Image (cartoon, rainbow, N blue to C red; front, side):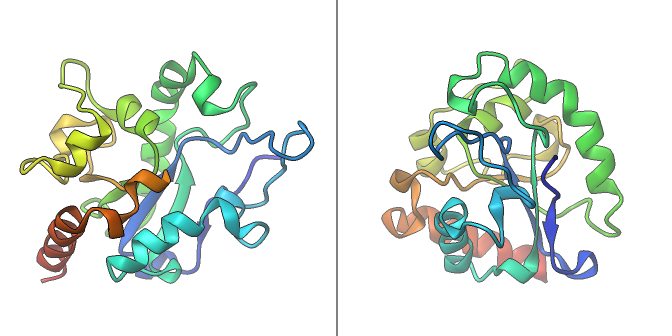
Length: 184
């Protein structure tokens, strides 16, 4: 089984939320089977921190389309998978086709929930910044479409507790300002 993307209503989304892949061996060292990306509707712990960050920005579960960069289970969890970036880049054309099917979505931002995703979607030759640099830089957030393989605005919104928006008020304010701009 491959987890499905999660979306309440494709005609009213405001952003995409991108996970790495569904692979998780936290349950007695057996793979956790998910019905939707991030186990939405099964186990809130996989998505709670991300949802809290989104809520800080005025975005709710009803406003997003949630998918993984690699929608299939992998042999290793992302942090242990030495082939993640290579495999993810091979899947980007499929993901782009999937996202393009959502009418009017070409300019919607993509929230990246992990640093490995950022490294996988950045175009060759672009400078890879550290997570802390991404959260403190005064430039290029969102990462412009021409600098990434998804050809969409990218916003780092990492799920790790160090990157919760309540710990980064300046970054949070910049994102709120950006989201206000694209609404108008």
